[in-house]
Structures are given as structure tokens and as C-alpha cells.
Length: 279
Image 1 (cartoon, one colour):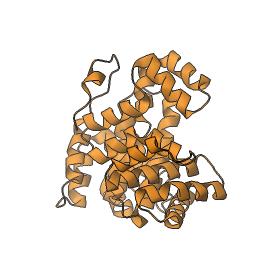
Image 2 (cartoon, helix red, strand yellow):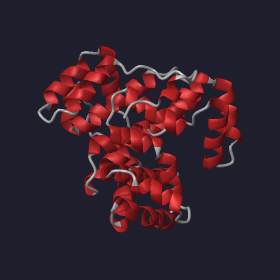
Image 3 (cartoon, helix red, strand yellow):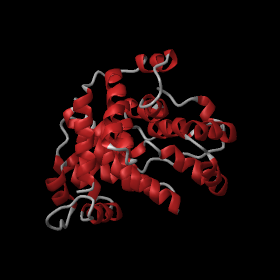
Image 4 (spheres, one colour):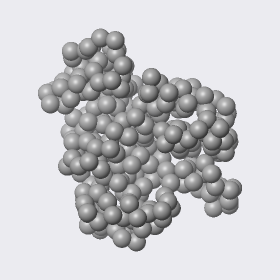
């Protein structure tokens, strides 16, 4: 699906994908690619490889011993988690640092890990799930860089997610979900990932909103994998936001049927993956 021409006319820059990540994306899509090839590609960029090893040794991954190289990290975590971590570091590096974006990327890293790990029980591709989690709020980064002071004030003044999106649309001509989907497309990510980022607000709304024909129509028009990425992402976001077990179960029950998922299985997978992050 090509990027909407209307987005190209906006005065909002989307950073180009670093070449290492372009090559890594191609490798991850190749069924014949092996761990050695993926590790070697990451190690071609010394700064990126160093950042990957440093992050793998952080408390988030909870390894019992320190790793010293990318191939060693791949052996402990697997190609998917190391490759997704490489994308996270590349995504961070594509935008200038700021406290707002540091918090956004920290949240993205946790979301991506949780979605990738929970996906195994839900017949969802772990690589798609992990990258969808990483890029879910990436459009906010583009708007933040475009209007550093103004965007922070807009976010602070928005009373809820719907108002936030509407205000972004009025102020900039596009909201962060649409921009995030466009960034995914421009970086060559799978169409399912781009669609899940673009439609994320609809999925979050589906956790709590009353059923409606408009929401039903949006869900029915999407593919099996997009629906599952949307349901998984919305429930992981709710869990990361700290909703209690009862509300999380209620949200899973509301959204799971739209994706052809068992509500109890979805709840168990999400709760377990998020708990592991904090373990």
C-alpha cells in the first residue's frame, strides 16, 4: 500500500530508515536467513552493535550472565528479540533525543517485548508483533520533532485519546497514528505492521466502547493478522498502563472476538508477558 500522497505534502519530516535496518528487515523476511547472518549484519555497524550488547545486558532482559557480543546475545535471546532491539535502537537514533522521546522509546521497547512474547500463544507472527509494538507511537516522535514546544502543550492539554487525535489532525493535518503508519511503510516494514499502527486508536477504543456499526466496519475490513496485532497491542497497552486484572480481563473479552481469539487465552498471554517484564 503506497503512502497517501496527502501525507507527502505535509511539512512533517519522516526520517529515512538506516541502511543496516533496511538490510536487516530483508533478512528477517527471508526464511533461509540464519542467526549467524543476522548477527554479522548487526556487527557491521560498530556503534549499533555496541548499543545492542549494552542494552541486552540491562535489567530489562534479566540475563544471568553478561554477554560480550551480538552473536552471544542472539544465542541467549534469539534472532527476533535481538533484531527487534536493533530496530528499537535505530528508531531512537533516527530522532533527536529529548525527555519526551526517551520516555516514548522506553515504553516502545517494553511494548514490543511484551507483544512479541505474548504472540507465541496466539498464532501471531512474533516478528510482526514485536515491530508493531515498537512503532505503535512512532508518529508522536515525528510530531514532537516537528513542533517541539507546541506538541508538548497539545499533549498536556488533551483530556483523552480521542481529543488528542482530533487536535493533532486540526493542528498538523495528520494525527500520530497515520504518521506512524506512514513511517512503517517508508521503512519497509510489513503492511500488517503499518496497518496496526495506523488503526491503533480504533483498537484502543474497542476495549471500552459500546459496539457500533462504524467500529465493526473498520474491523471487518482488515486481514486476520492485522486484527490479531490490533487486539494484542490494545491489551498489552492496557496492561502496561496498569489496569487491574478485572479490567484487563474485561478488555480482552471485549476485543478478542473481533480477532478470532479466545478471551481467556489472550488475557493469560498478555498478563504473563507483561509480568515477565517486571520480574
